[in-house]
Length: 246
Image (cartoon, rainbow, N blue to C red):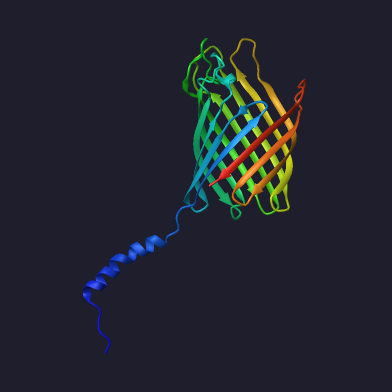
């Protein structure tokens, strides 16, 4: 007859089973993207964005924009101090086998661009609030993106407060393995100002196209250019972005 196992061995096997099963569980999906960006209006601004899976097809999301343009330090010297800073979080919903992603987020700005500043400038935490919505679609052949954000002043520190609406839409077709081209429309509107005699007005309206290179190691580079079609505007627009996702 076969010999029985020792009772102590049996107990150890039972105790170790949950740990072995836990080691085989799938870890939540997570990603982190770093990007450097530059265009002729906003200047140079690094960004980051992260996601962490909290439920099937649902991710916690966060982002940050490190605005570096000294002109956004309203009321202060253009020395690079009190730079505008944006940080926020939200959720990302995925569907259509992860081809479609819908990401509502709520961010906050810190600085003086929206809240204003007295002469000499001042660093204002929670300068403004930014509800936003980003929608992305990508499959083997097509790609598209929609972004809309409302920059609303939260504080009244200086004499002039500003609100902005910023949105863009682009769509493209992928060629070969690493190249895609498409069209791009973008608009920035100063939707409110408390300046005497001020009124809502468009800041720019860009219409053009882009070319993007996407390498297999999750690295992308996109150049976008075209015309500023705002009435009375002169010149073109251009923007460049390079990103890596971990």
